[in-house]
Amino acid sequence: GESVGLHLPTLSVQEGDNSIINCAYSNSASDYFIWYKQESGKGPQFIIDIRSNMDKRQGQRVTVLLNKTVKHLSLQIAATQPGDSAVYFCAENILGGAQKLVFGQGTRLTINP
Amino acid sequence: EAGVAQSPRYKIIEKRQSVAFWCNPISGHATLYWYQQILGQGPKLLIQFQNNGVVDDSQLPKDRFSAERLKGVDSTLKIQPAKLEDSAVYLCASSPGANQPQHFGDGTRLSIL
Image (cartoon, rainbow over all chains, first blue to last red; front, side):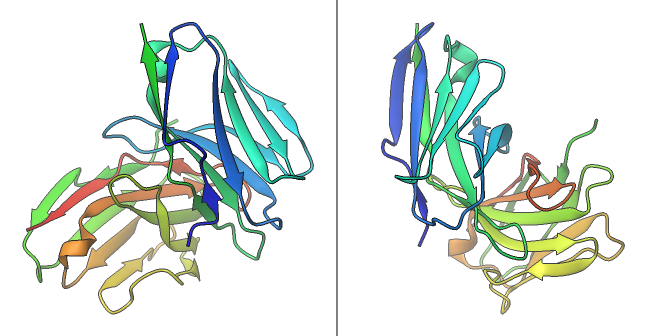
């Protein structure tokens, strides 16, 4: 079965608030993690990635935190906007000869006006 | 930079028929992936190519699914014969190499009647 899961399948936030999307992974050998955003009818869009030798990485309005002790990954979106409404997937790369991403089930983020 | 191109966008066929999907990756990307995304789930890797060689096809149902990347650029994924459970979105992704972000196309939505 999937080794990556999410704590909540849906998340509703007020426009302008910060959003935090969580992800648990089970494979301690995973060395690379990616967050994707998927809008209806479109393919997953790369947001941000982090390697296992880091615990935090920041992008434009997004921050990814990695806690290897408890095998937890989170995506923080600052000042959430209506355009942030989508399903968010975390994916982990299973360490091995070839990159093999395992995706979680996803969290649907809804922005309330 | 042009993204990953896929066609067709939609396909409806009857069970036991055959179908083919086409993918043109981002120019210069050596690695190409095919994923299956069932409604409400994250993408699941079917096959991965490095240039024109198969790196991982462990989750490809080889009795009915086949894929090729003859010249190390474009790729086709075929299903023959299709089953009802093959209804899904088939996503193609490419990356410059291992442990680098995969970039997805918008997929082909396949419906089996």
